Image 1 (tube, one colour):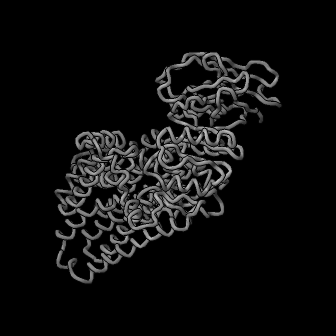
Image 2 (cartoon, rainbow, N blue to C red):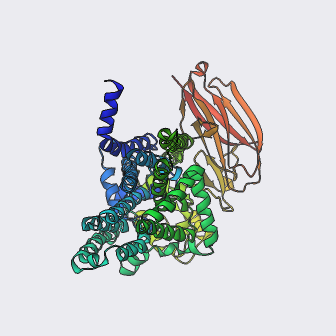
Image 3 (cartoon, helix red, strand yellow):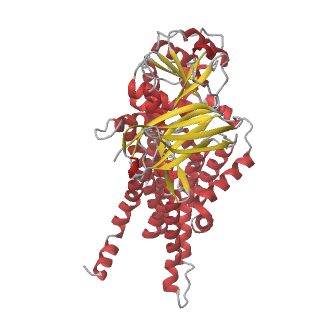
Length: 627
């Protein structure tokens, strides 16, 4: 087939080809970058809720939980990986809606495709295409609302309002921020044929669709009532008051205290420029102006949506606030596509080079998109360690043991292992922050039901005191461990590192020759990966092959005082293969000794990496070398 014939086919089928490329390219990339299981953050807790049909943290996310359960049953993957595939698909389909929205406005197929793909590989959007979270589903539904709104403005057909109601209603059963679209919807109704919309039949159909879909929330009290001691039902929302408390997310109101609108808007602006780059930011501004001038209803509708979302996010100081930025980012991506379309046509000019000028800005966008892809491809390794941490830490627990964890990362990773993977009540996992919180009686009740063999302190003591009582009451009957990120002194008990976990022991019970250590959070072996100049520790393994770069990693407790550390790698014969010493400052959370595995290192038996801290052995990590 010659070039001319191929070009004719491409032109004839550009709509179909671009339509499939818009979601297929990001979907393939997201799949390639999927982690082996759960990641840090809420991923393990949400996976656990879906797999066990429990109740996730507020607002409960019933739609995500039920869809996640279906994808967790895929026969060709593990449950968590199946839910990850769902998020990759939904995030890719959200990119498709961005493509369709830009094309609907501009009529430019390839510019719409390149703009959508640029957006697909921005950092935060790509990140949520590869992890288990509620935001990929939220982005898909937001994209559906946005596209339906644009179709209504362009065509004024009621079927688009009904479709918008479907996406809006489903969105409200997944993430409550969908309500931020409501002011724009009101403006849309008032500015475009209000007499047609505010009639009993169309308005009744729209309201009926939205309210009917809210019946999905009945899943939450049903799941809570059937949870028993096997499935975690956050807040135990079996009564109306607890159900309302849970679905409205009232316990997270604390994140609005002390937040500054000005600081929040500045944070959003700086993050946006970092994600979209200078060129993307410029094109977004140009597109917004063009939309306001050429189609004021559409321009104002998008502006109202954007403003509502940015103001809401600016007054909400939650840790993962950048995940909330994706809705306004989606609007910016549409504006960016409009901007580049306008620059490549209206401003191409009629001079000598006008026939080439039309392609300059799309070409620049393609180059910027490729740069963005290269810049963010290290996402493949982000937060993957949570999978290995949870799997190996839980596997290291003996029967009749209690592990106390803190903060969402290690706590949720262990919660996922305890309830969704192993369901072994003989190994008790306790989230310290939840267990010691006076208001979380429901969580303590759940643990009492699930682990009746544990001696549980009575209600009335909270904070660190209840943790000390728990340890004292069970010290003789259970082996006690911690996986603390921020370690709390538990005098008179001391910590003895066991790799990912640390044993809690009284000084008299610490074996001779073993020294306790309060500075080491955990230690592990990894294959070191490099993306450009960036170094990543993406896994935790005990078998290495020639060509691998072994990393012997020590992670330190927050605000330790600084330590002198020596790493020593020993051959099975007893020969020292590598030794390195240095001072690790309090400002350094992670440090590692790295060694390339050579063919000459292949040898039967066990190698070790010993980490010595201030003259005492902190951890000894065994490994093997094979082909």
